Structures are given as structure tokens and as C-alpha cells.
Length: 369
Image (cartoon, rainbow, N blue to C red; front, side, top):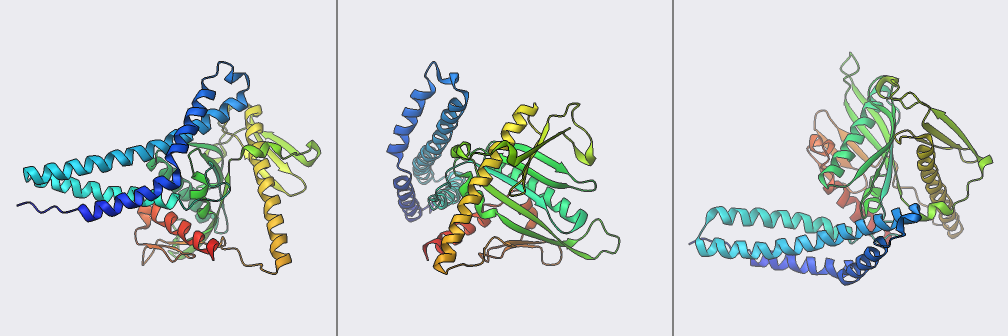
């Protein structure tokens, strides 16, 4: 007789899923989708392009969120049927399929449960991620390129739309910097725990002495905010430079000066955009990112002032938050959470969910303390 008693596991999974549904507020989410759908169907919607883009983007995000919930609910129901059939027919293949599906659902629901911890002011928004190479020469620029691929592969695994906005290639290997946008619900809250200094230790492929090389790269994550347009940036406070977009090795990838670099003179913040088709589009995209960074900078300064007045200034956890060891022990270790992965190749191929989930839980505990 076939033994397949998964009832306790499924009951626990359904209880967790019910908690998630309550937090997400499925009824409220459905009502919001109906409202946004009505707005999106208005005949004059695209008379205001900016408003139309906000409405359609919000609608897409809410629909994606609801679809994830309904798909999981359907899969749980289908699993019950699969188990029933496997027992009735004494079919080992169906039993094995049921066990595999249960394990996969545990992973998916676990990830969704972590998302319910994302209750920060901007956590539900899309994200703009910038990677910059640090100390370490060619190893550092190569490391920055590895991180870029890592995040793009992670987004691809989750079917999140990604748009690379700017890439500055190094003369040797890799990239000096890159900026990309992940347009998905809770992308900022999820990826914000990746912000900080990343360290790579390996035998350098660029040296002849086979010595261990340590290199660094910085990751910045900011939310895509509608309110960024409210930040006024006087023309006298910025310097705008235009240049030709470049590819690997400095090769020009178009014949017009369409790339834009905006420098905010009072703060020294620099934003470059080169992946849009026109100079006007690149300037608009660069200004949006600059306004967001200025808004966040202002809020950080206000928060720091409040902490100073309260006498509770603490060191930032964002400095050197993760180390990647590609020699000897082969390990990726998050220095904040203590979470370790013994397969760096999988991590660099986008398998980041465990590291990210540990970071989100760690941050939530720190916030609640």
C-alpha cells in the first residue's frame, strides 16, 4: 500500500498562506485593480502621458501581485487532488510529483512570507540599482560585471522586467559602473538589503603570480518614486554633459551625442544615462534618478539629525556587508546575518533568494528592537 501522508505539511502550509492573504488584503487588492482598470480604460488616458504611465504601471504591479496569490491557491488545491489520485491509484510517480510540488510550494510561500515583512515606506516600489567598481583594478571592474550579471539573472529567474539604463565599461575587464531598473512589485524592499560594499577574494585571473586578490564593489539601491518630480532642481545647480554612448573597450555604439551626464554641483552627485534612443529621453531618465537620490539624501540627513539630537547614532550596517570567496573554501557569507552559501557559482548565477530573505528578516529584527 502506498504511504503518502502529507496532510500535516499541507495544513501548515495553508495556515501560513492564510496569514499572507490577510496581510496582502486580497479583497482590497481586487478592488484597487478594478479602480485602476477603470482609469486605464478611460478614452483620454494618454492625453497625459506621465499620468497614463503611472496608472498602467500601478495596474500591472497589482495584477502581478494578485496573480501570484491566486496561482498559489490553485496549486494548493491541485496538490490535494494529486495526492488523492496517487493514493487511490497507488501510483508512485504521482506520489513523487506530489512531494516535489509540496517542496516547491514551501519555497514559493516562504518567499512570499518574507515579502510580508516589507512594510517600509517605499518597499512596495520598483527599484533602481547602481553597481560601482571599487579598489582592486581589473579584478574590481570584473567583479562589478559579475554582480551585474548576478542581479540580472536573479530578476530573470523571477520573470521581473529589467531595463539597463547606463553602463560604463572599463578599459580592461568588466565595467566601472552600471545602472538598471527592476520594474516589479516590492523590488525596492527586496533588493534594498543588497545595498552596501561587496568584497571578492580569489586568485586573480589578471595577474601572473597566482596571488590572492581582494577587490570591492558598491551596490546602491533606490526606489522609483512618483514624488521625485516634486524635488526642485534649479538649472544653476546642475551641469549637463552630452557624449556618445560607448560599449566594451570604449567603442562608440551610436553616431550622435545622445548620452547624458548630469552633475549636481552642490552635492557632487553624478547620474549618467545612455541607453535611451534620444538625448531628451536620457536627460529625463537621469533627472528622475537624480531627483530620487536628492530626496533620499534629504531624508537621510533629517534622520541623522534626529538620531544625533537623541544621542543614538549607530554605525551603518551597509559597509562591507558580504564576502565572496572563490578560492579554497568556496563560500559566500553575509557579514550581517551570518548566512552562508557553499556554492558561489550558483549565487553568481542569480540564486540569491536565501541571502535576500535572511537580510530582510535580519533588518526586520533590527527595526523591531
